[in-house]
Amino acid sequence: MDRTKDRSGELKSVIISVAGLFLVAVGDVVFFMVTGRGIPCLIRKVTGRLCPGCGMTHAFAALLHGDIAAAWTYNPLSITVIPVLGVYLLYRLIKTIRTGEDKFRAWEIILLLILFIPTVGFWIVRNLS
Image (cartoon, rainbow, N blue to C red; front, side, top):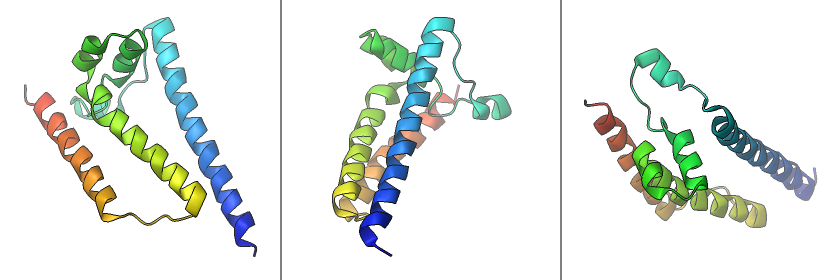
């Protein structure tokens, strides 16, 4: 099998997946801005506790209006962890497209841990009260 054709099929699949996720996220924020209702959190429905992503729709809507303070109030991860993670994922996508390499380097694992630890800490702290 031609490796180039195999990579182009994988690339097309990744691009479609990323575009689909982006459209769902944008659609959720637009729907929220129009109706005042977002996607309900399944973790909150089942456990009664807030997940690390709870408030993200409100935060992104606030960011679209340029209100960084409100975004921070709704979910601090929206202006800290999420932008860094987004840039990293874009880097990974471009790297995979250009080289086909899918192995993680040590610095990438460290970066993901640096993003994961405060996310878990935030999840715990926001549910203490």
